[in-house]
Image (cartoon, rainbow, N blue to C red; front, top):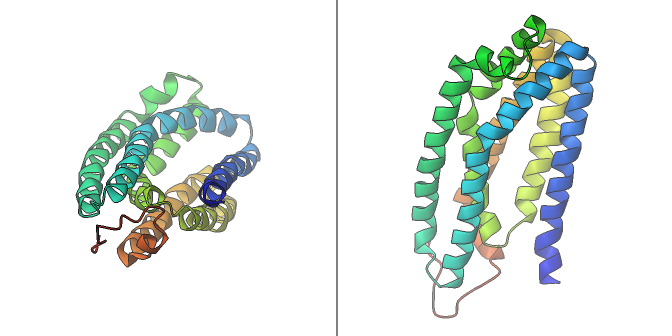
Length: 220
């Protein structure tokens, strides 16, 4: 039962994320083949830029679980700060690369001028906010490490299906493809706020899977 309680929200989160990408692709499809090609090229670069944050977050999840299980909750905050600094450094480097080398990077996949123009706008808009993406993933790793997967699941629903998809659809009717791209960092910003607020609230400590009898759980 405990495994189901922890695993089902995580599985549902991955399913919703995949469905969200499909929904966003459908919005992009309405702008023609150039937009589709640009989204595909920029999306590959975007995925590459986001890998450090996701990997650091996975490492932090394991770190949190191990230290809570060992009765050393005081190390959780230090681990979060260290992970945020390392992940943030990679995020800033990715931002500089994507923003200042956007056109040559898109040309690696497609040399059509229209595709390069649209893809470059994607990298400029989305790539400027990788620090928000990093913050969202890293901060959300702490409750997951404690075994609290339900709140991160709910945050995903809010950021993806209440913020990103509706906002991208609405802005696209006013700003064209730029509107689609602006919905992405807007969702990251909301995700960062919600994840940080939940971490600071400390409520995730009440959902800890392992509670060492000999160790207290001080404020994180």
